[in-house]
Image 1 (tube, rainbow, N blue to C red):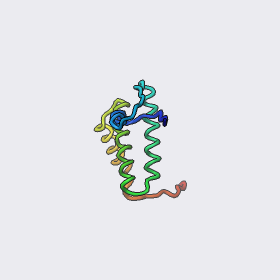
Image 2: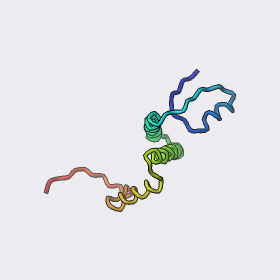
Image 3: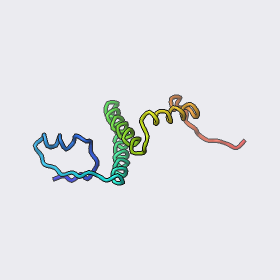
Image 4: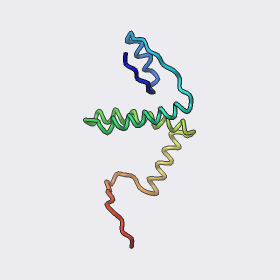
Length: 108
């Protein structure tokens, strides 16, 4: 019997049961939840970095986006507020679209 001990999407227990398998779960407290969300984000980021093709990359990015939206709520904010912060940073410092790679900076 595999032991997972990890945060899973809300419908995973239902899907396991529909497959005719037994499982055990528990509800995390707030502190555990924050920790496990961060752990899951790191897991999904690693899976994105290891994606073999664009389709796999998009699947992992969708998981990362789901986690970012959930973490935004956990931190007492909204996705709209997060987008506003992102837009402000882009306006002040730019985005990453121009592919600029900083090599070094010398004192004047």
